[in-house]
Length: 220
Image 1 (tube, rainbow, N blue to C red):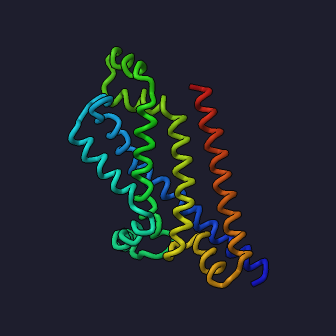
Image 2: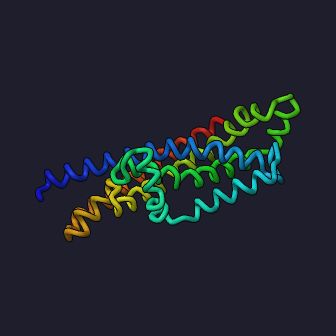
Image 3: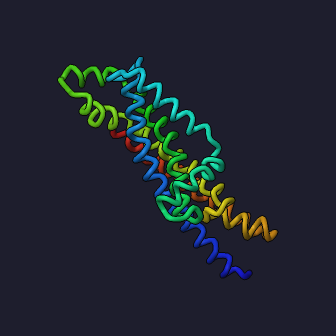
């Protein structure tokens, strides 16, 4: 394999990883946002609309899903991937387990961020006649945005790691490249290049996320 072939493989694998991480981030936020809001608002101790039973049910479900090792969860979700995508192997199919694996983490991130908002701000909004919906969308979420951005940044970084593990069972991307062409064919150079690209991706995401969170914190 010459360098042109190597760079071609790395380019394709990097693109596959970016697709997996981008769409799984989008879907995990779509799934995790309502769960996180529910966990915050239904908390029997600090929620704006306490629902002890509902809170206990949802928090148990989130805890169970978070405790699953990703490789095992991905295998368990093969049938769901086949139903939604039509296959359980490949870049697109991997988005399903990635999204479901990250959603509980996103829910906890959102719950924690919303609970960090100063209770005085919520009380002031309540005193002005704001409804629960208005408090959530116009007070809690805007006030928690810097923390939310930092949490989503961490989620993206975790998903990059998850996508690399997904390569071990046919998920495609840089993990698949490192295993099939690097490890199984004893090509250390391919493994090194794959790891370097993953490290660069993580660093870029972290820098962008930190700067964006800091900028929102200054403007708040």
